[in-house]
Length: 287
Image (cartoon, rainbow, N blue to C red; front, side, top):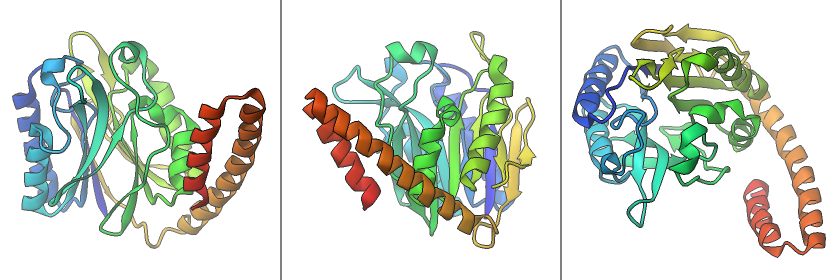
C-alpha cells in the first residue's frame, strides 16, 4: 500500500485556491501510484473558523472535489473539513474519508485546542474504525494524537493504520515529533499524518508530515517545507501486526475493568445519565 501525506501551506479564507492546490497534489501523487492520500486539517477554509466557509460533509465542495479525484484515480483521500452542523451556526472540525463512492466515514474532533474551544462543538471521543478496500483506518485530528486513549481505542477496535489530519503549531514541534512516534509504537500500528506548514499570518505550523512504522520508526518525513511524504507500507506482512492486535486485546481488557469501576462509582453517586452513557459505550467494546 502506497501512502502519501500532503504537507501544504494554505491560504486562509480562500477555498478555491486551497482545493485547487490540493487537487493538483493529489493528481501528482496518483501519478506516482498512491493508494491513500492524506490532506491537512480544515483543508478548504485554511485554519480559520468563519461560518461562511463551513460546508456539508456529504455533498459540500470539498467532498465533491475529493470524490471526483478518488474516482478518476482509484484512490482514497482523507482530509479535514470545516463542517456546518445543524442548525446553522453549529461548527465541527471534521475529518472525512472519501472514495470513488463518496464519503464513507466522518469523524468530528473531540479534543480541541486553544481558540477552538469557543467555536467547535466536540464530537464523541470514541469513534468507529473506517474500512476501505480491506484496510481498517483509525482517524484522528491534530492534537488528538497527543492523547493515548483515542489511538488506543482505535487499535483495540482493529485499526491497521492510524491516520491524522493536522494543523499542529510550530512552537510544539517536539511534542508532535514525539507523540506521532509514540502512538505508532505503543499500539504496534502504522501511523500517517498530514500537517500544515508555513505561516498563515496568524499562526506558524510545524510540518513534519510523515509515515511512522509500528516500532516508532519514521519511514518518511516531509520536513518543515511544503511537499509530499510518500512511502510503501506492507500491512499484510508486517511482523508487528499480530502483536498490535494482542496489545489491543490487553488494552481492551484493562479498559473494561476501569470502566466497570467508573460505572459502579457513578451509580453509587446517583449519576444515572453518565452511567447509561457508559453502559452504551461498554456494549460497543464488548461487541
